[in-house]
Image (cartoon, rainbow, N blue to C red; front, side):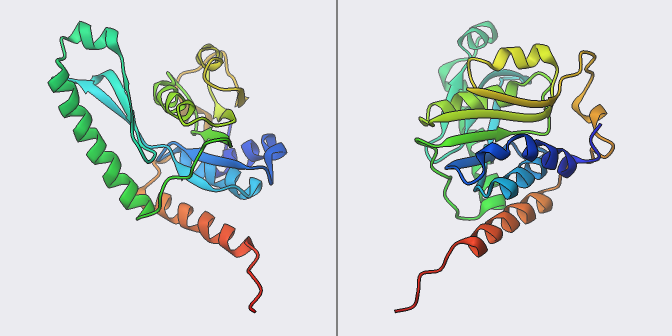
Length: 224
């Protein structure tokens, strides 16, 4: 049982401390993954960025995923061909829904990060973090997108997840770090004493704090 997301982040950071001072990027799935990832980024002295993933829902059935779109400079669109065919979704319908979700991603990036560009991932170690996994669908889409940006090494790190879900990620991540793997799993929130919703203001504050901390540690060039 974790006290809250920051407690889970500190414990996860301890498991990842071997990556400290290496060329790595910490990516958080917002909003709940941000307090966890912020603690990891502080310990590893690594930049913190967001992995903004939006589900593309079927026309008239928004909860039924037919694909995903992921932010990161040039957005990446993942299509579930089987579900597109089963739901009878046309190319025009898919593109329209995808465009709507891209607008939402852009809105969230401006809200959370202002004009800051996404961290480059090519050739680096990328650590993708959420506050836990249930089905893992959002994490799965995010990792597929990360892979397309040619990182050197991909780590999926979560405080808690059911073993059967973790088994489905071995082809997407080079390393899986999970602190708790309960056989009887009902929901992520059951493993936290405090699992209140992470608000936009907290996401913005934590990203700002991590940026400020890294800037404060960056050596200044001597004045000529």
